[in-house]
Image (cartoon, rainbow, N blue to C red; front, side, top):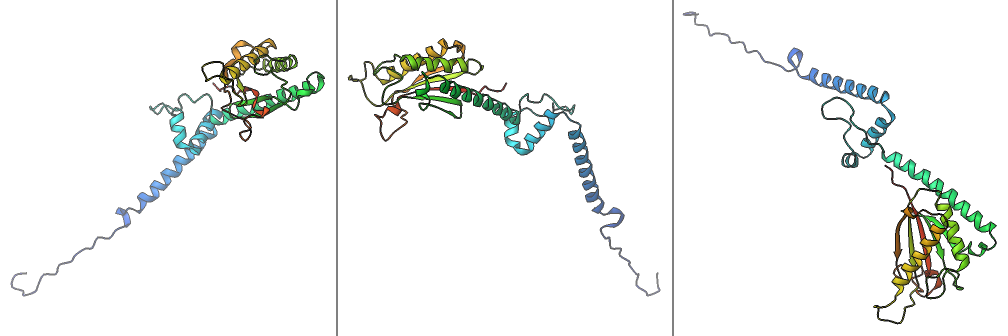
Length: 258
């Protein structure tokens, strides 16, 4: 006021956070929305098809591997699930386990056949079967009497041929592909490598075994590979000339899931 001599009083209002215009409610709202989204996802999963559940589970187990090996669960338009991979990792494992059971039955059948056949009973300790990465490996290992082949040749002896034919008959009951391998010991032919060598011998022995398998009933189209390794994969490295290095390997491969 003019002429009053009194100084004007200025009142300053201090704005404090919180209250009606604070940010705490935003945090609470965000938590609520997150909880609702989680609820909707759980409800969707509970009503989804088994293959969708497996695909989602596969993602959470290995998100990196899933993203590189499988298609997205969504078509990118928000329209819901797109094409789910026909075979998930867990299903592949189930298929492989089923094949292992089939291999086990075949293994038991072969062992039983060997024990029943008096002509082949002497081979029972020379036939070894084991599960390997590729499938079931049936390995026929020679002994000191050269029971499988005539020395230095690819000619199968009579009983050995019957044994391989019997194996071929059992494998023919399955749709799996097979690989036949030939191995020799380290005894070398007298030449400088330009003539007949252990590579030719092991390859020809593998081919002789392949022919016996087919004669026993195996389908020609089941043959995936025939390999001759010579003495490059010795069973007994300490004694490269040992008869245990002379062998034929027949691997019944796992079927690939489609």
